[in-house]
Length: 71
Image 1 (cartoon, one colour):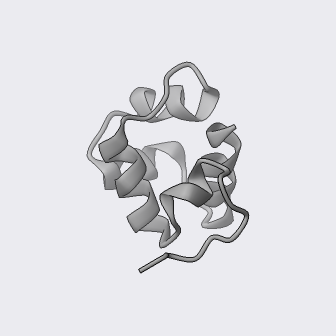
Image 2 (cartoon, helix red, strand yellow):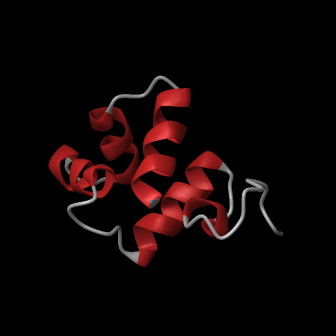
């Protein structure tokens, strides 16, 4: 389910997969595999995505519907 959340967040910002992959310093194909559900993103990528989108990791993982950071 994380794939839908990260896709929606990316599309809300009108970023391409390539643009997001560049921000994460990974290949577009690696990012695409996360978004397509072929691979689960590792913890360091989850944290980077949460920081980039200014949401909690719990939000990315559908543990909450509240996107705010818990800091």
